[in-house]
Structure formats: structure tokens, C-alpha cells
Image 1: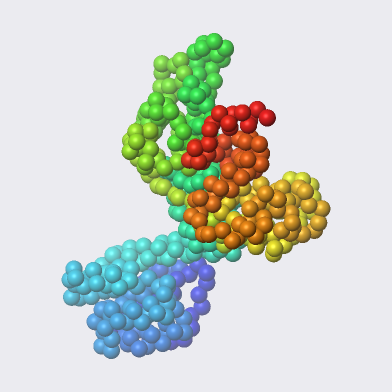
Image 2: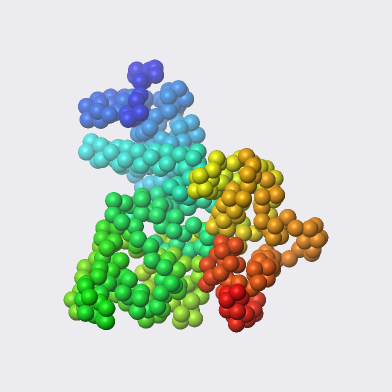
Length: 469
């Protein structure tokens, strides 16, 4: 057989055929050269010759007999995999068995063909292998770009936790299925929802976000479903709801855990039937949008307590994405800090400052109860108030417990949750028990702050009094 290196382009495939019957090799090489126009085909009757060729030029696809004169096919496959880990290996044999097929695929074979097989079967298998290789290459390029750039859309991250999230977004984005995004306040759930939309087949359509915890049930129905003319006093015209306006696009139902139970029943019907009734309407209206829901609540617990409908929960969580809190992906803090500094500088019309090492070091041990949103507010404040070319630890908020007097460092170790609650109370106290101001400093919603303060048995009356100040 002809030896030597073969010219191969980015879009071509290199196929090796290994069989100890010379006639079989010649027949397959001739047949594939005639049909596989995007491929270079080489044949070998000795495993040793094939291995030498693999060392010189790794193939994309290998078609190998299991029984060879100078090697066992499974063993040869393992040796080829060590030299060309991305090669798709198709094993062929005249002595087929189910056990052998299972063993071959477990060892890493792409496919297993039993003799006698038709050329049509072989060509179909090769075509499948090519599609597999192209798909994997595209995914690898995407992951490499993400790793290099450290971002996907507006999401910043290079840690393994975030790379997994990026990979899932790329896989799930094109699938027109419901997605549930879980994560603490400030972890970037809306950014993930937008990334899913941008990687979907609906990316030319609108992306609309709706906060389920910000309205009463009547207002939720009106906003989502719209209303007919004359449905209530003041309804002088027919109004399209958000679900109709999002035609061929994506709808993010944010804070889905805050939606009233009676409204959950209506939403369930929408998901089942893909149709709505406008407020005051009697005719169903078809809708065409993808649903993404987001929550910082424990929906599993809420389902058990009867606070969230189980059937709706299962409808929403066809795919679930859990975003890690910032304290679990601290390796991303330096990149996020630089990103937020540039973003804030652009917002304020200032030159982007460098971020000093001491600035980053000072915040690396902080638990960030408000996650990325709190970090962004912290950096934005520093950029707004600083007149220097570099941010330093002195530009951080004076009430940040990490840079207070050393007494904090000397305290006995305490659970992270307790430290978080202690810090929240300190900020709350310094604002004169003003809920709005406290939530703003922490970078969390008032609803989240209210729940955390309840855990500390702090009077809501005091909260209300503080808000009046």
C-alpha cells in the first residue's frame, strides 16, 4: 500500500482501513475513494504499518477488522486511541457476537459492523462518524473560545463551574424546551436566560422578562394575558399581553416562586395548551413562545409544603440550570471586577481604571450575599468616587467587614451562613434600619432581604419604620 504523508484540508477527512485480507482492503479503498469525495483513504494489511502511519498523521476515521495477523483489533483500537484520541473507530468482524459488540463500544469504538456488510451500510456509518466529528469539533471550538475569552454573551467566568454552565447553555439553547434556572439573588439568572435565547432558534424574536413577585394576581393576569376592550373600567382598547407580544421569542418568568397559587393554575394551562384567554375574553388565543423560569426559592420544599404546584414545577423544569453563588466560584472575581470596572467607567464617561491587586485581595474572602450584583455595585461605587487611575483597597466601602479592624479576624470560626447574616444586620443597622437602602447596598431584592431578616427574628414593624426615614 502507498505510504507517506497525505495533504489534508480543514474540511477533509483522513480514513484508514485495516484488514489482513489484501483484496478486502483494495476493494474498500477503491469504493470509498469513489464515493467519499471529501476524504483521503489509505489501506493497510498490517497493524504495525497502520500504527506507524497513525504516529505520522493521525486519522479522523479508522475502519479495522477485529482479527488481524499481527494484532488483536480491540488492543489495536486502544493503541490508536492513545495516538489519535479524537479518531472515530469502526470495528468490523466476521465472527459477530453481542458480548463482543458491547465490549467494543465500551472500549470506545464508534460503531461495530458484522460481516458481510453492504457498502451502503459502511457509507452510512462513515457519514454518521463524520457528522459526529464535525459536531464535536464545533463544541470543542466553542468551549475553547469561552475558555479564552472568559465569557459567553454578558456572562463572565473561567472556573470549571461556569464552563459547565456555558456548555449546558450551548447544548440546551437550540432545544425548544422549558428551562428552570435556580440560583441565589444576584447570580445572573437573567443573563443566563438571555444567553439561552441568543443561542436558540428564536433569537430573531423578542426576549421579554416578567417579575412574578412584583404584581398582584390581577395585574399578573393583565400583564401576561392582556385584556379585551371593556373588560374593566378604563379598558378602552384591547391590549395584547406579554405572552402574545413575545411571539416566536422567549419569555423569562422571573421569581416564579413568588407567583400566587391561583395564578399558577392559569399558567399551567397555558403551558399545556399553548393558548391564553385575555382578561374579559371568551375566545382562546394561540401563543408561540418559549418559557424560561427563574427562582431563588427552594421549589422542591415549596412543593412539599403545598406552596407551589407540583405539576407546574415538572412542566417548568424540563431542563434545570443551577447557578453557583459567587463564593463558590471565587476564581472568577478578578475577571468580574475588571469587567465591572470597565462597564462603570463607560457609564460615568470616565477612563477605565486599572484594578489594584490589593483591591481584589481585600474582597476575595468576602462571602458576597448579593453575589455578582453586589460585586458590581461595590465596583461601580469605587469607580464613581475614585479620581485615581487605579482602584485600591481604600476605594472599598468603609463598612465592608473584611477591611475593618483586626478584631473580626480574631473571632472564633463561625459558619458562613452566620457570618452572612451578621454582615447583613450590620449594614441594616448602619442604614438606620432602612430596608430599601440596605437592599441596595447588599445588591439584593427587598423580598430577599425581608426573608433573611425574618430568619434573624427582626421585627418587620421596625423595617417599615426604617423605610419611612
